[in-house]
Amino acid sequence: MKRIYKWLLIIPIGIFSACDSLLDIDPEYTQDAENFFNTPEDFNRAIIGVYDMMQPAYLNIWIGEIASDNAIAGGESVNDTRGLHEIQDMTHGGVNDELRAVMRVNYTGIARANYIFENQNKIDFPGKNLILAEARMMRAYFYFNLVNYFGDMPLIIDRRLSINEVSSTPRAPKADIYAQIEADLRASIDVLPATVTETGRLTSGAATALLGKVLLYQGKYPEAATVLGGLIDSNPGGYSLFEDFTTLFLVANQNVSEDVFTIQFSGLNGGDYGCLICLNGNAAVGFHGVRQYEGPFYADGNSYNLPTQNLYDAFDDNDIRRDATILDIEAFIASQPNPSSITYAVGGGGHTGYYQNKYIKRANELGLPDDDLTSPLNYRVIRWADVLLMAAEAFQRSGNDGRARTELNKVRQRVNMPAINASGDALYQAILRERRLELSGEGYRFWDLVRTGQAAERISGFVTGKHELFPIPQVEIDLVGGTWSQNPGY
Image (tube, rainbow, N blue to C red; front, side, top):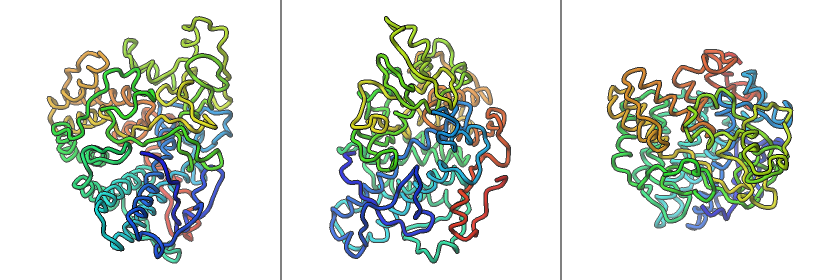
């Protein structure tokens, strides 16, 4: 999507009012509803404001990998983004800047969507239903993030919440939140187009894929199989697997047929380290770069989110996805014509010898003026391979091993790996393993381990009954007068 406006709405609720050094979501200017939502352009500016709140995708990438067996936090030192190191070690608690950012970002997105719905009847114009459908899908996406991280959360729909109501608004059961998510997605599917002319706008295929994921995460396997299988069979967006996995995550190969639900970025600035939420670029890319790197192909970065030896060893030696996913820095240097000319530094936050090779800063993909923060590399929230693997899992858990193998082996065939012919639990485990190999580095691993009951055996320090959820930020509990209970174990 063309990022023209950086329009920030008033956030009229206590938990969104404070600022910190990581994230600044205070409005650059504000506009009340009486003087706004009077023209179609006002509504269009408002929906772009909702789209903006999907841009902090780096939080999901980092936490989804670092909380799992896929990566360590890295960085300059253990005090460089301490919250990520605590999440890595499973020592995180209610005081954690990264988790607070997750809550604030997603509720800000919800507040912006609700502001549109609160004023939806002020005027009528062609295209308003499409804007409302986009707002519904994004609200579902924000609530899905929140329920995964925190479980029960306040459920606020179609209106702003006055400051006087904050302390009396309880955390709604996550079943109620899931019901709202499903309702929003089903409503948006009926309105969103199959394809769009403006890059970055949401589609019915994106909403359907997200609905399938939401159902899968709840263990509603037959329903998920119906939704995801229907998407595969009808394929309204003309989706397909990109032929060359090794180049899929280059800027030159963005917006291809594999992209189902994608957050768009640009190489423009928009923000800085004092306001990451203001960025137009993908912050994860620069943060994943090789520290003080001087050499070909890559550019220097901040050495965050470093893949583990465990992840590297999970790949077969002949699986092309390994090197496309994980940069073995010493092997890369040794393969170059003049290796002695290539230098880099090791950060004090840990070093594995590996770097994320999907979302990483490359020399010919730099933005301006601060290329640490302005990568134009898009974030693929759901790509077609993920749809196929989610469908495979849903079909297998529903008793249809044949269809499950069909979808699983489409993914393996793309990377020239042999077909899987297993059945039952062996097939199920093969599907879960394939998810790790295909999707590592993209922020899904922790959630996959938690929802499949494998987190305790795979994640060091994971405590069953506690770490399935993250703690509610203590400052938010304090801001609502202590009326919200903390999650168990924290």
